[in-house]
Image (tube, rainbow, N blue to C red; front, side):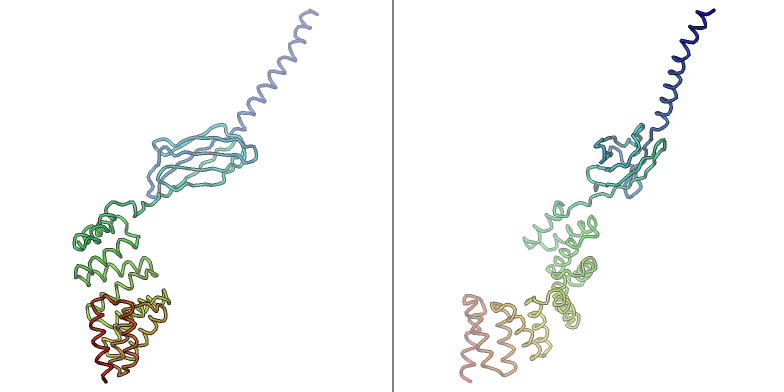
Length: 307
């Protein structure tokens, strides 16, 4: 009896230790967290094979997992902490966030990855359209750039190039529609305003042409080309003094602007200021002695000097 009692007394501490171990073990499992979620694109479609990384900045520990075919992921047994989480998939912008995992809790997240838009410079149709335009095949370029606008509806480049292709192929009305879309997408698209001004000028809509070139000067006040075009329209509208003022502004910004000197010479002849006309025409000849208009300029100067 005594011996049995001693045996039972000897076993009691062992059972107590085992019980304590089980309690601690169960508590350990109870403290584990579950990290799960879903990754989708901005159209709501699930994204598989997304690389998910959790980094604990205080401990330096790292956990990695991936989303399945349904875009879902689960990680059990992540120690409670605050993690720097990243979600990566080729063709999408990397998404980063801070995620806090609490002891014994299940943390669910819904992640939306934004697709990286394709680069227009890498588009073969865009490159083909540019080549056709450079070769003077404007009608063919129109067809290609129309296709590019469908692929890049939020990019100014295809609409600008479409508009200029329409303009060079003799269709200013359709050019205007494309160029107006270009400036809606990019209100400071300087070259688009130049092209719009040329379209309206070709259609005889001087007021709208002036408006387009004036917007160009608002965008780039130091653009000699904009003032030159304003001068050409003013000259055509018989606003001689106004035209001379614009040509002089263009020359002030670019003293070697030969076309501005030539037009200023013609405008001053119309005004009756022959001395200034001779000065501008002589400067034009100095800048472009071999141009097709150099002979005409020389003849005009000779006539003016006789007066």
